[in-house]
Image (tube, rainbow, N blue to C red):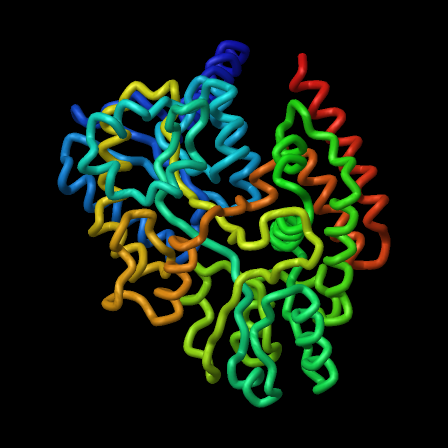
Length: 428
């Protein structure tokens, strides 16, 4: 009898565990006749958390036959978790994805639904998206994602300090170094930086690669099938980054980006390299805010006017049983109304045309968006442009360089080893 009870208890426990797992995320369940969609994103914190919750609530109100279950985890955890989840038999119907290589991995693995027909069959909707933001989700002439935000990276500066010292926004790298020298000479921590999270490093390194390395070489090396990273210009790019070390705050690897942003906002440093979507997060500053693009690097073989940045958006699982409903939600998310709400409530810029305007944006935000729209070419986020293993070797090594524990040549040797592994696997 006791043995029977133990077996029953074990069976009950296992059933509850399995029931709990399937209850967390399912793409086909119905709740009193409703279609249930699972929606997975990377913003469990405010203000994005409330924004997406309100979008879901409004969508469900307008579509009472559809229920959306939302799950969110923070940025770095998301990168790993989404890869695991899309590899299961029960992936989320709609999931966040960065563009370029990060999105491409889902396409290669047949984990993303081809959305081309939805774009073609509903031009009223698709034509309102900024074309340059759709392109990074396009592979082999097929569209696999819907861009929700657009963003770029700029140097922000304290206009009051610049005016006081009679210095101007630099256009070239040499001018940039001269400005940093003047700021340091006048006892300023010239450039605020937090490299505790390595993605902040990638924005510097990736932009310097774009400025110094020829487009042909970059295209070859960023391709997982052909990448070798043996061009000496990659070393020069890291050496340029080293030139900034005397002008950063101390212990950059112990400081996160949010703290660095706060220091800049509080006037503790006159310059900060940040995403344009962070303007609202600066809060009301006691100084006038200015911005300029990453300087041109003299002698560089790359594109000197690129603006580093990428759209962020969503993909639909190739295994979803409700593709029509999933796309209805993404179309709703990218209506002009929800785009304007994104700008107003979150401070990020919608990829929907005309959503950033004088009614919901500051002059600085309007200037930032215009810079994105005017740029001839966007240079995608570096860590999203290359295989994760190459990015890890690059950024972990550069983090050590900031502490004086590694040289540019040593970093590139590690990168080349990682590239060899990736290239070998891609060629199988």
